Image 1 (cartoon, helix red, strand yellow):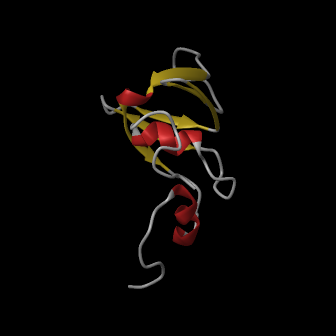
Image 2 (cartoon, helix red, strand yellow):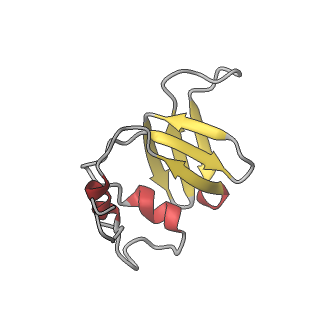
Length: 98
């Protein structure tokens, strides 16, 4: 679970990736501050940088992308994951109530 002060930064995206729960597949789409969408199937982190691995190369032939956490605007989860499993990320609220 993501907890305050658990990562050495106040960047929420860095905390999210650093403490990714095992109950959620390590794949999705990162949306950059410039609106570019980068689909990934695996990732690694170091300091302020995120290394994303694509399943297939982009138009320039690149399978891996390194991005600064400060340039991430959003992250999309592609798998159908139950809302209750996101509590491992630290999200709170009524689950299943409509």
